[in-house]
Structures are given as C-alpha cells and as structure tokens.
Image (cartoon, rainbow, N blue to C red; front, side):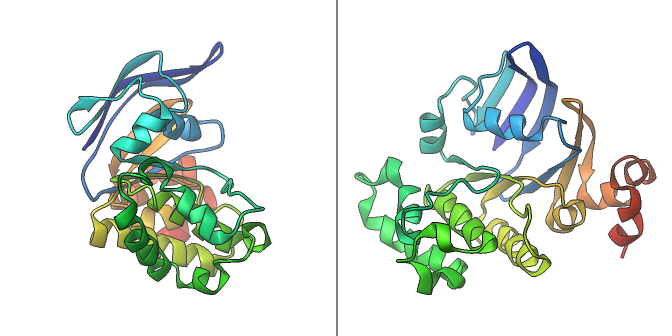
Length: 244
C-alpha cells in the first residue's frame, strides 16, 4: 500500500533522514522505535507532506506522492495525528472531531455523521463530553479526540506520533487496544512512532529501529523483542519486561 524508497529529508543543513526503505501493507501496524533525535517525527512529517524530501520516492497504491502537499496527502487517504495532540482547546469536542472531515465535508456530507457515530462508539468516553471545550479534558481524553479527529478524515493510512506520551498506563492500554482494533476490524494501515517500546511492540505486526536517520534493523515485532542486540542497544532495563 505504501512504499518508501531511498528517502532523504533535511531540516536546513541538517540531514535527518538518510536513505530509508520500507513497505507498509494494507491492515498492517508498523511500529517505528528509536531514541530522541533519531528522525521518527521527521519521517511521519515527510510521509504526511509536512516536509518535502530532497531525494527518494514515496508511493501510495502505486502512485508517487513524494512532492504532494498535506492537503493532497490527506485527501488521498493518509492522515497524521501529531505529537502532543494539538487539538483546538477553545472548541468543543464535537467541533474538533468534525474538523477532521473538512476536506470532504461538501462532497461526502452524508457519510460524515455515520463516521462520527462510529468514532463515538470507538471512544465511548467522549460521548458525554461532546459539547465540552476540548481544553478541559484530561490528557488521555484529549488524545482520544486527536485520534478521532484523524479518523474523521477517513484515512487508509494513519500516522501516529507518540500517542501515549505522558498518559497513565490504563489509558495507554486502552489506546493501544483501539489501534490494534482499527487494523483488525477496519483494515486501516498504521505507522506508530512510540517511545513506549513495550506497548508499541506488543501490538505491532512489524517494526523498524531508527537511529541517526537510518533503519538499523527491521523485522516482525516478535523478532525485535527477542533480539539480544536490540534489547541491549535500545531497550536496556526493559529487557526482562519485554520478555514477560
């Protein structure tokens, strides 16, 4: 579904992504793990059209989208849920969700209510809060709004940047279960950037380790969990936890 070849991205003179190659299949959950500064957020931004790569190709369903804008990328079915949620605090929960469908509001108005109802079923905690200002919600509830807003774009590929950052363990578990459900029941493809390595690899089909802008290892999530070199280099004290 999504194919990345020899992807290079710069921020000014800083060479951030250095020749990335990977493929995302339909209904697959791919976790990207790595330390701060490894290029994870830049990768998602490049796939979403926020950043323009200097070299390489991005193909979606066989068509090149390497130079597409954010608007074109969203309209084709790829949506980014950014780090730290970035919701509209002064707007209601309902308005935040509806804004996710802005690009299809006129031509697809009849199905938007159906999609909205589906998202409320997916995040039932939001149902009694629809008219509340989003800024008054807890961090976990705001993250649900952010993911729901992304889903209102009706994406085939969902890009998530640190969705569990700063959240309580029970909320993390709920969100991870929902992401797995989206892949299994809606056939949504997901690229998940996450520093909570244990949670990310538990729900992933496949994973890549990103370091200094390069993919240093890739494989199934199970393979990465059980690889001693990866445990030593990236998981440290999580080694025993990951094997439980």
